[in-house]
Amino acid sequence: MLVPDPEGDPCALDRVCLGLIVVGQEVRPAALLVRALEQAGAQGIGRSRVPLRLQGVEQALPAAGSGVDDMPWRPLDLDDLVHSLDAPAHVPVPPVPPAVEVRLATPLRMRIRGRYVTPQAFEPVAFVRTVLRRATHLGASHCPGFDDAALAAAGRQAAGLRLVSGDLYWRDLRRYSARQGRTVPMGGVVGTARMAGEALAGVWPWLWQGQWWHAGKGATMGLGRYRLRPLREA
Figure 1: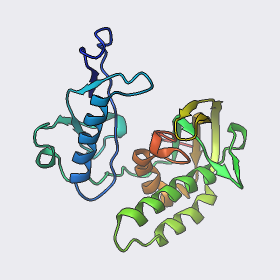
Figure 2 (figure 1 turned 90 degrees about the vertical axis):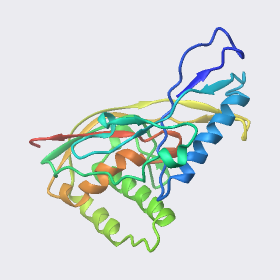
Figure 3 (figure 1 turned 30 degrees about the vertical axis):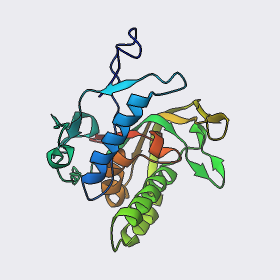
């Protein structure tokens, strides 16, 4: 948790909670990342360079039966982050439901044949394959001896999914890129979609874990965050 430094701006006393998902097999990179954020906050964030002070760090602990938003958290020792961090956790996967509701919490920028998918063109097979594509990239980067055969098989099975219903719309977002010197579009699809089909069994583990790593373009900046709600019937 970062808080504005009173000495830098006495009127800005609100807390800022920053959520980070670190992928890897060691805890040291996570500790280094926290220290880098602490130094960045001291130098000031944004165009106005508002100084921020690191107040505390907590680690989420995935547990059986818990989703992304209801995991238990525990505070860490700021003076010894490396030893207070738990080892990277395996995300428990619940049983496969008959159907699932997907809630796109942040804009999903999903491209097919060079074009961004609109709410009207959203299809379960394209969404699942986008999730699997990100899993492939992460596996190749962080897992020695990674074999994408299972992911490729899941991608083929995804063709059997069907869209039961959807309430999707396009949300426009923009950010200023100092590197490019211009405003960059970051809009995408948000809302909810229900999908079902026997093919769900083959893609379920990847779809569930994908809630932690997001999907689509801009995933590293928080885009493509989605949540799943298992349904008892299609």
